[in-house]
Length: 190
Image (cartoon, rainbow, N blue to C red):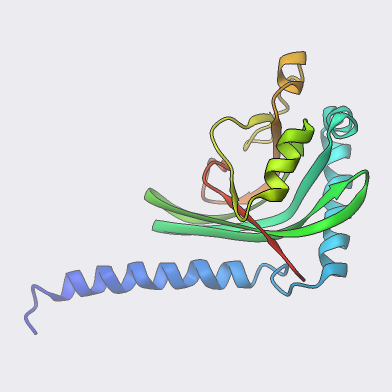
């Protein structure tokens, strides 16, 4: 093997190693054990934290037809990245289904982060579309009431008419700019 091939192999090996780190981080996030009781307990803690830190979300929750609560999403990446987490869909305060969230990305990125998020389904149609799909992907049309920096955004009448509203909070780590666009949610049986 010539020395000119070594840097390429090293970069490829490093990229594959980072991809492995992403999977390891996702599996080690403490939610990956598919235990319904643990997921529900984490959902309760996440909702309490959100309602305490961002009181405007209480009104949104009361007006929503359902909420998907993802207590912990772990993302990691170096050029290629990914994220994973598990949570519960709540309707009228009761868990009705469990979901996993998976996200892949490519581009200029380096680091890792963890955060929680809640999707508020503001219409029956939005909730039904989510529940009927075999894998629902978040798009650019989601409205945000708490953004990736933890800033509370206004809850205007226009915002409340958005079919799906998101709150991202509790972010920790070095990969900045959490967004839900491209995240795929799939129902699971814990």
